[in-house]
Image 1: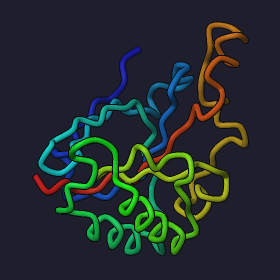
Image 2 (image 1 turned 90 degrees about the horizontal axis):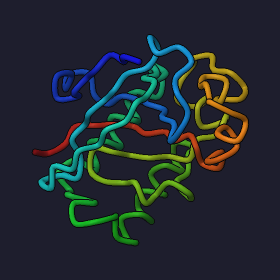
Image 3 (image 1 turned 120 degrees about the vertical axis):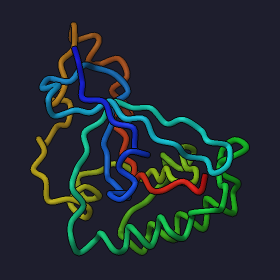
Length: 165
């Protein structure tokens, strides 16, 4: 399977972007997926690599998402491991203002990589893209066992912004 490859430093003018990713399974329609590399973690320059679907952000949410990404730009949050509790609490409040949460995904947070809990509601807030009711319908599995294995928190969602470095 060959996916389109993108390094986000080649599209900096188009950041932030919204992506959904899957921890396992193979894309059913590879032409809709991107093999993405993104730099995060501030000066730590942590490499964030995922196969993902890039989704357009609703026009009315784009400025709010830009403000979120701008707030955390230059903070080096997550540069030396996961975010500290104060940063998580602050970030959680930022997301709540958008109608989002990070109760499960906060561990992934770093400068330029902003996770949020993926729900039907969170997707509807951020994108008008029509997606299947069950996101697993976007994937193919070798067996029913493979589909069952890893089904909890298989899907992740991120807002990717500019990194200070």
